[in-house]
Length: 79
Image (cartoon, rainbow, N blue to C red):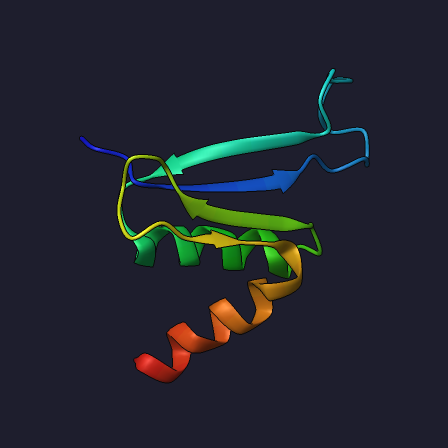
C-alpha cells in the first residue's frame, strides 16, 4: 500500500495518553479523501490539525492548521 498523505494532530492533554516527548502524532494515509475524513474527525475534537502529501508525491500539498477548515469545506462542496 502506497501512502501519499499525512495528517498530524496535537496529542490531547486530558491525561488519556502517557506523557510523550513530542506533543503531536502523525498518521499516514493512502488517499486524500481518507485524509480529509481523518482530519475532520480530529478537527471536530478541537485538536490542531496539519495535513499534506508525502514527498515524492506530486502535486505536493501542504495544508497548515489555519487552512484546514477551508480544505475540509472544499471537500463537502465537491460532494
